[in-house]
Image (cartoon, rainbow, N blue to C red):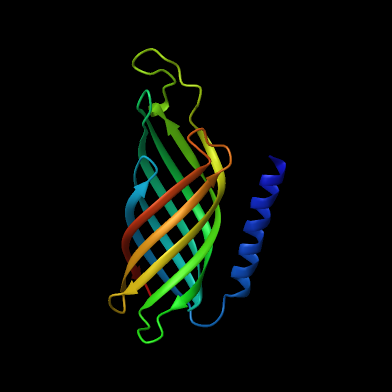
Amino acid sequence: MRRTGFFISTLFCLMASSALGQMRGNLASSVGVSAGYVEDGYGIMGTFNFHPNRFQYFQISVLAAIAEDKGAQNIPYNIFTIQPGLYYRVFMAPRRKNFSVFLGGGGLFGYEVINNGSNELPNGALITGKSRFIYGVNLGAEMELGLSNDFSLLVKANEYYHVNSDVGNFYPYAGVGLRYFLF
């Protein structure tokens, strides 16, 4: 447990120092929204990106997931997380400069709500899992297709590792959305 906390703290410090070192040149910001699939349900994600250059960006994203664990009993759960991260461009179409692929990752923290906060099911059975604060790391991939100078079509895929979740440690998200460049 202590090792994981140390890893996440070190990751945030490295991202912050990299951000401060990159704060020069042409700066840009963008916001995006996407909706898609999470394990056992649906999710929506909002993002804010800070682009210190054309090859990378720092991202703060918020994910809200609404799902239901299907088994002997259907147990609803919600996950709300905030993910700070860093993404790098790994591919740009050589002839058409409006298509790029980015890979990145970062930390995450948030809250999961199991069975709307109740530990009892309608049939009287008790749930051993409980609602709690969660934390972990994420890896992500984004494909961006420029539609105009201000808008891009976004395809996003993330894999989350929740260290202390009762829903499950690995949690996927895949979605499609739009990105708007502020300046």
